[in-house]
Length: 134
Image (tube, rainbow, N blue to C red):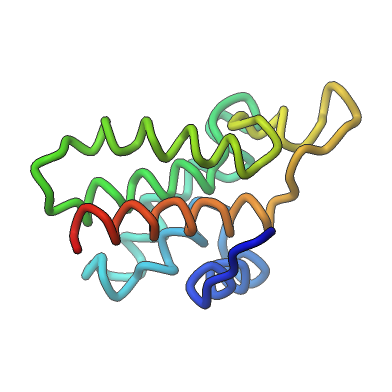
């Protein structure tokens, strides 16, 4: 990993304490989201082990896109920004965005561990927010 941010490392701390990957990314933006902690945790609660229990999109990426939806103050629709985030996350994470693929469940070859997925989720969101919200 080339880029490290304090917020990304804080998200990893959340993941190691009480949060799944989506919740960890969301909690890294707790202050900016301006919502009660319980609501933030509830919002990300269904994305542990990726959407649908490893069958769908990585929870860290889902958390980043949820936070984007709440933090995007630009005229660019969040879905367009999310498309870019997905591509960047995929490049950073060894070519995958599906939890099962990232963990190598079917292939035995892990593309990206959960800590790095959480870091990547925060990093792609940080990058986009810096551009769209100044």
